[in-house]
Amino acid sequence: MYARFGGTENKVDRPLALLRRAARYGKDLARPALLAMLATLLATVSRVAEPLVIRRGVDDGVIAGDLATLTIAAVVYLALLGLQYVFGRWSLQSVGSVAERYLRGLRVRVFAHLMSLDIPYFSRSKAGVLVSRMTSDIDALTQFASEGAFSVVSSVLTVLGVGAAMFFVDSTLALVVMALLPLLALATVVFRRFADRAYQQVREQIGQVLATLQEAIAGVRVVQAYTQEEGQATRFGRVNRSYYEANIAAARAISTYFPAIDFIRTLGIALVLLVGGLRVADGQMSFGSLVAFLLYLNWFFEPLVQLSNVYNLLQAALAALSKLFGLLDEQPEVSEAEKAVPLPESGAGELTFEEVTFGYDPAAPVLHQVDLTVRAGTRLAVVGETGAGKSTLAKLAIRFYDPLAGRVRLDGSDLRSVTFESLRRRIAFVPQEGFIFRGSLRENIAFARPDIDDERIWEVCETLGIDEWVRQLPERLDTELRERGSRLSSGERQLVALARALAASPALVVLDEATSNLDPGTEEQVERAFQALLEDRTSMVIAHRLQTAQRADQVVVVDEGRIVEHGTPEELVAQGGAYARLANVWALSEERSGARW
Image 1 (tube, helix red, strand yellow):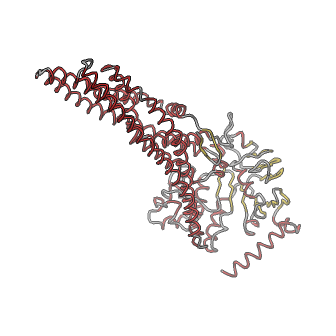
Image 2 (image 1 turned 60 degrees about the horizontal axis):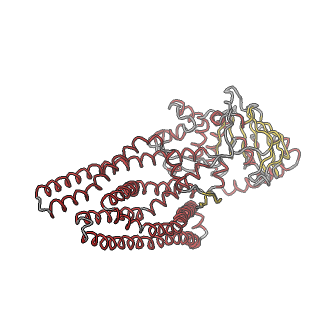
Image 3 (image 1 turned 60 degrees about the vertical axis):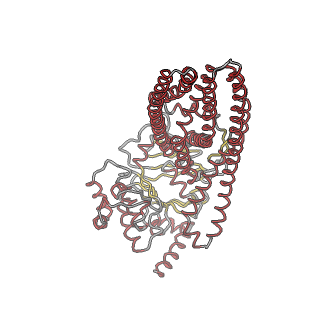
């Protein structure tokens, strides 16, 4: 059985190996699982004993005309029904509780692992597919836990118990029934061959449906701006068609298997009536035994049919487990060293690139032997054409990636040798568009340092000059910002992002210029906050505007992955090289922009 995950084809564990691995994740649930099994076993024993009581009532009560025996049999039968109800309810609750507790732990495990994966992994993975791991795949397990887990446990125990009881009642008839098992096994093998492939495709295609849906919703403004609604609907239709075909294939397998099971059961009843009737007529078997055996025969096939009914749930759950385990098996390319040490707290934030070469594809480097030092307390602007490698330098500086060759150091320490926690506490990253999490303004500002108090948060707001704006909000720091900060403007979201960075008290700030997409009025406010954040701090700024580059202490020009110029803004303008040409282009662009405003 194979499954596609993350764009590659991976062999999935065999079902039994998959279940063994799943069991290892639930070791802490061993005791409640055993209690649930005991409850199910007692419920099964109570049920299996009922036909034996009926046999006694028929043979020694009805046929013999013994009213006392018949009455005792009826009372015992009612007692068994009561026990079956009590143990059955206990079993159902216990199995459901164990299953839900297991899923709760699995959700936490998968989410924690997902958050531990590195940026390269997320760059090559579709967001919709990852979301489907935590939604549709977990939902498949939840559905099996709520609807199928009890049936599986109960049905397996019932088949074993009823099989033993049939041999106890009459071994000849039991052998007749067992002779039908090869037919049942053949039907099951054929069904599994087609159903396994079909359900694996169902799990795969639903991920593609979610990925396409998420992409279309995220880009709906662009879709409507270019009137591509019909094209997107056609694209979604193709993906949805594949999902539909996968479900039809699964339904086709089920529609063949279930009637086959019913036919085998009917054939078994006919054979038991024929052989058992002859044995009763010959006096080799009591009539009560035949009645009991017919009850057992129906109960023998009934759980098999139940197992067939939940097979689609089981297959969906197994396929979901294989996907989730595939995610859990993913290992980050950028990982913490085994003997990583914390960065010294006394460091001033000096950043050094030493002969750094890097490529997202190792065969196609985008940076070539970069040597660069950002002195402590200075501001470095990185400029260059689109695709020159500016953002890649920033990603290496915060260790979203590791260089293929060379080293990146912070205060003399190789980033690969320090702990992630100390590194993230010393470096703040502000993207071009500030990301806002659902929650209060307080929670967003304190995101990097959840332990800071309100006094420190208000100090941050005053330093950035946004304290008056915060006081004007409906609930000040308790104001809910909603998902992705939907109630804030672009400039306000950027102000919150800058406040978050300042609250972290970093030694080094890495920014993808925070004012490039703002209107002039908002830009001025954000620019003031921007300057307050960078005051007396080491900073690397990906500059998209002349004004930003001019305010830097040093400027480097990146061209095709190499640093071609390095100096102060004034020195580079005087040289009349790449920076001077770029500065002229920026100046003309900003003049035209100002004229329009």
